[in-house]
Amino acid sequence: MVVFCTSALCKRKTSEACLLGEEDFEIFPENEKELKDTCKFAKTTLQCAVDFVDKCGERNFDLFHSNYEKVGKLMDAAAEICRPESELYSRVVQLLPCTRNILRNDEELCQEHSREAIVSLERTMVNNKNAKSERNRLYKLYDCLFPVLTSNCFLIQTTKKCGSQARNTALEIMGKVGLLDSECLQSNRDEALQLLEIVQFLIGEEIYTKQLV
Figure 1 (cartoon, rainbow, N blue to C red):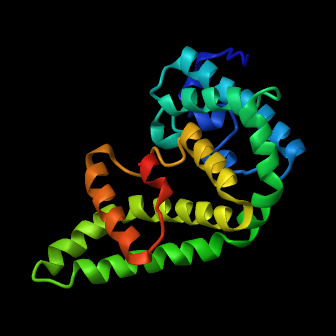
Figure 2: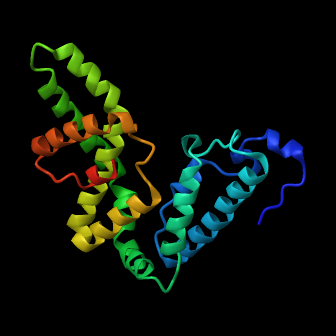
């Protein structure tokens, strides 16, 4: 447990008090040793965030789009993923040697693939008399659609190179850690899913990440 000794510390943000940023949680381990290191880091830093909020309240909590519930979700995920005797831990360890090359080499490919999919969607949507309103609708949802499609591209590459079981494990982890929780507003969920159905038809690929929206 991290002990906060002074009320002056409560004037800081959580990221300052615990010396971490959201990018610290975007590191994907490449082998079992790195997985153990990541688990140790997650346990320590997430507990620091909990201790900070217990003492200082949520007012200065600035991680994960100021969504404190995400801390609990990550702690629950880490408790299962990081437990060596768990079935999920074994599957994750088996997954790492194959997916590390996808993470290293396919980021640009997936980003470009996602942009092309959205361009195709835009062409379909604006090809009518409501072109302006449809374009505005798409732009409103871009920040939701792009990460959903990019994450899905990772899953597709995982299927091609590592098999469907590896893909299912990766998708399960994405869900447990709430990878896309903050990307799509709940108020836009139905609309986003509707557009993802159109994209799925246009690109001819399953969009596995729809279930995470």
